[in-house]
Length: 183
Length: 189
Length: 170
Image (cartoon, rainbow over the protein chains, first blue to last red):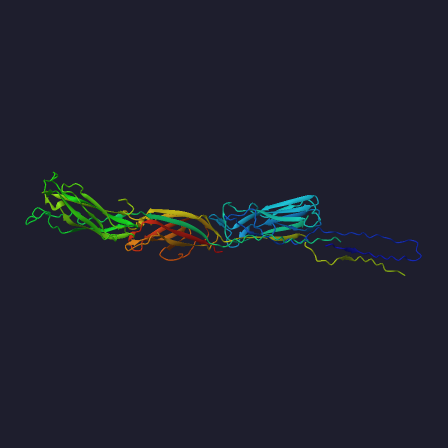
């Protein structure tokens, strides 16, 4: 949303009659545009991956039973020349028991891939829940492109800590957090 | 003022994830065994039939075959565990331990009838028909077929003791045997 | 006459809601694993051979008792149950007096987390056992063999089976 700054300077100088010398001055005009980022489409929603296991009970690495698409796009606007992006994601954890033992696991890892369209080309952030510690934060290295769906988030590469572990039955939940801040 | 394109995510009609039915899973251990067809004859009781004195010792029939009471041997708890069994009786005439050819008017053989009962509906019978010199001493007979598995006490009765031509019996110890066979009816005679 | 000098500089900021400086949000990731059981090895056979005693023709229980077979399966739910249904050994030929054509016995299925059993003397399945989440061998053992009258065993081929059923419960 644009902000309009109106600067109206009616300056009425009334000349004094019959004086030969005029009085004059100047007024400088300045304004600022603060750097800010906004999600023009909300960064929200759900990846519904459906049934996570193969017939043999192990993880379906391709998430082939996904109910919703494996990719979502957002439109983010930043007015600054660069932006800082921070991403973190939690693994899909079984709501009853997310532990791993005895050939079973209640935790499914995945990779969250976020692609930003910059004016100067794409910039990709890859966050794997199995080998990450904390938040992935790094600048875009350029101005975010001013176009719809300039940010695409996708999930892929389902895997478990031990490849042969069977998945415990139940519901699994995880979350991907994205923050884009002006630089 | 720029136009903002609001992004409507397409609701793609993906085929529903296969609803993995909470069905039961079954595994099966098949078990097989067998019982071989078998017949067992009870041990004969008595195992040896002693007829005692075979010839009359006085009176008009002195020296000739006496009247000998029929003798019965039990083969207790004999059984066949299959359908279609039969009892075969093979009797061998009693003959004297004196093996020389008997003089005219004398016999060294005693014939008799051996009958096995209490197995199938029809008894198994064999009547020996030895000549006075003891040749052709053996006779054999089959009873009817027992259609079901059976366990029973088979009774073997020895009777009808005669001498060929009712001749005078030579002296000696006379011996004969009866073989009882219990087996499948398909066995050839 | 002096005129007042008006210098008004109204700086009007459009009354739009104050936006956060950052764009932030969270996307959920959800999935489900249905409760399931699956046999990796669903069939086995126990061949007992000759089951009557050579001298007496009666049932030799030592040919049955203690015999085992191994199946292999998994269940991914904590409330999974296992039941056994044991069917007697029989041969088609009828058994006259003094004979038997049937062998009853108990089949027991064991995993590390529990075991279930059933006797062929009782119709239907045995009591379910809660085996929960497991992945491995199921040992099936035969025991308590008997014949109805202790009589002579009718000759022939005898067949029966032990069925192991796994039920997933979410």
